Image 1 (cartoon, one colour):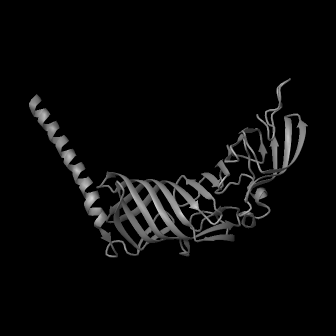
Image 2: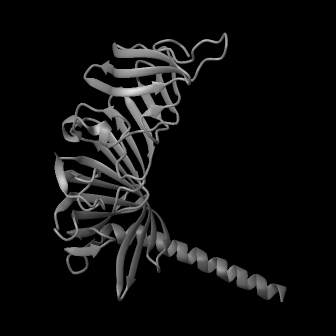
Image 3: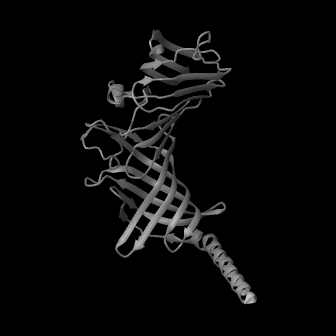
Length: 344
């Protein structure tokens, strides 16, 4: 009986090794030399929960130590009107793990894309989003078109493909979109809780050559401002930007180190009053700091009205306008923990 059980276990193990080897050989030899043209996916259109993806062609290739799939001629269309939100020239998909070849469930390591155009719209109900991705109820009042966007990386948590006779759907779960290079010479990172809309939880990260601003934003709106007015986006957002998108910050940490190698602003959520602001730095040398500060003492402690603050490093400028900051009252005999330009 024991020998029989051992034989069964060895047989199962041998079968598993054979299956693994078969998948490996499939990925190494079949996939790199396979081209899938219009007989299968040419001009394939999928309805994926409110937006359309139109794919020109798909082909397999080999990249380094893992298989890949290149998708050419991709368009993400706005529902009903079929306006193009994204026009992608080529997408490279790196498959990190095939979880189940039978269910079609894949875990992807990265998706790289070259995008020829990107559009952002502002709606009359106050929402800002991508055409076809925002569930705003109002009509578009203005739009911002960014041509020649290159090197967009999509970090996809799970790609689910259901290939049943009456259920051909493509579902993306856990999507991070990285704009490595834009006309602003910045990197824009947006984390979506689900594809198809700018959801309630999102993360905004702008990076220049020597300045990084990171803000965690949560709230019931699709784009919740943090009170930062970037010079490149100001004409699009409008002068009433802060009035339309009030910001509350329970706690904000501003960290500076090096020669302004990084400035990080985190922990934003709520309305225009910041309960706590900490400034920490180590040997920071700012070429230029411009600030208009007005300190007041209230029953809650020290209050700082920051009418204007600008950090300048060459052509990289971060501007904060009309922002009210409240500092907690220092302990008796203690020193203030927020001192602009000195050690905390």
